[in-house]
Length: 73
Image (cartoon, rainbow, N blue to C red; front, top):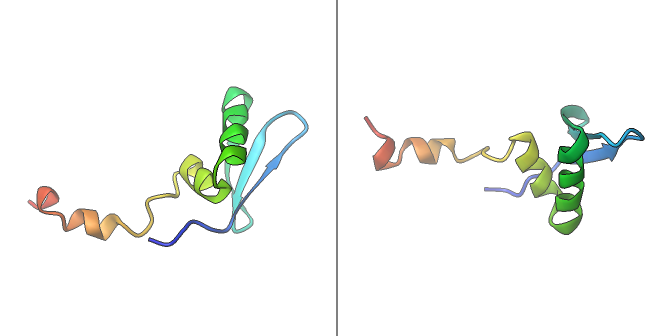
């Protein structure tokens, strides 16, 4: 699976964080969640962190999971 790309974030003056994907707003975090996100983004790979926080981290593996013997009916 390719590494996530196209994400960016901007911290606002009120402490909230807006995460964008390819220029479109994907998530807005406020309060403790925003602070936790900033800490994770600065400590690790920001692209992967933003993909996880927006829920956009499962792209590409749905077919593989569907074809797994455990998921066949």
